[in-house]
Length: 338
Image 1 (spheres, rainbow, N blue to C red):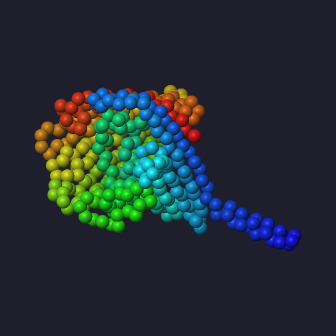
Image 2: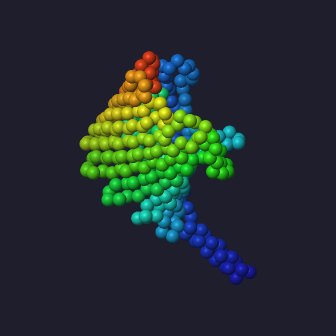
Image 3: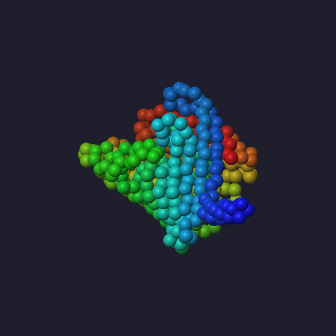
């Protein structure tokens, strides 16, 4: 009996050791936010809002390489059959050391030009997010993309590929089987290079292209876009500039030439303020070009894991229409991270 007990305990201990050696480390972070906002766009509704998110991250060793899986569950995710908490985004990455990192991305934004869509220094959020303005950068690809990134001579290169697909099914669905008929989304690629040529300075350049596949759309053309940015930080002050342009993605559509200027200042370890100006020129195939102008200020005050933030933004000539009314947006946010 004692021998059986010894053998059983030894086997159990061996199993636990083996499990521990191959265990995946999992971390969980989260946030909850309450907002009060108002927009002068003629839309009435409840000015209070809220959002929640949980992020699960796990990593494990694969013969010297590191596999990492990240999943974000929270508001704004893709609905499942029970309409319960949903996946907002996820990614599966394989770090191969000097050979770089490859991965499959479902909305996290790990690769390509989407990683530099707006690099201005903000105390809160991008000013164009809430007034209906656009930053002019049309990111190629969709929710399901593959990507690669690696460091070369102090710079990071990243590329994202999207083969194109039909209507995306919910998480856990079977996909579209490679359908290429009418109604499919565009295939595309985009890439970006970022680096720091000197202390305090960050620079980046990106380019992308969407190749149209829907034969039922006779006026479509391939959509191309380019962006470049530079930021410089000295003390608590950070300055930034970014330009982007795109051709509109269809024959006769307006192209966009966008300039964004920004500055932020860390008053102390807890308080930051920022100002931003964005000019989006609608380069029309016919008629007079119109510049959509968006300006805004942001404030953020941090108290441990809690932050109180405020944004005030205004857009003129929304959508490139000189007759459009000005849209103003004000938002106050209380965020708790854990």
